[in-house]
Length: 250
Image (tube, helix red, strand yellow):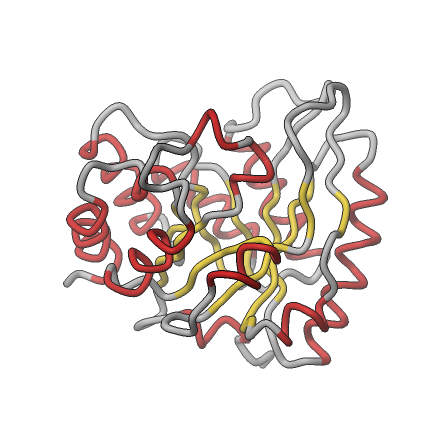
């Protein structure tokens, strides 16, 4: 049986990752305030909040990663300024990520974009290089583009999960379908690749978000890669505690 390279990010088979790669993807104005614009604040939440890992782009990792929790370096990115079919290209090598202390690497694939072959090819090479280093390659698989009609349907999300498996991802970060029954099909489609729910934009209430996470766990998912629903919260550590209880039962 294939070794689970995600083991360093797991507690009892479950996981909670703190994502902070949004600055490149969204810009500072839409997501950040006076507190969370500072990556040192996020690093502190990751350590004190009991997260299994933190996700940074390379520039943030170079300046702010301090080793208190395992690091995942996001290897590609794009801004929100260009319009048209989405494409996100590699901006950091696996070798450099490992030199920064990364225990895993991440890469976004826009499934359904007319540029998906370029991202498939790039991730394929990244996966091979990551496995040579003994670290996992995690695929953010987001169906997007003119061909995608509903990016949270049972069929589309399961396709995203399966695409990650087929491309060799050790874990996939995908959107929630809205209920445990339909999300369980995505977990089955991933066939052993670890399944993380993408935290997405700040939910209307904490309880709304916690219900989504409960659904992921009920469906057999590994856990959550969350950003804004924690570090945009008025009390991020309290929210992290609520998430730990749902995911780990403690």
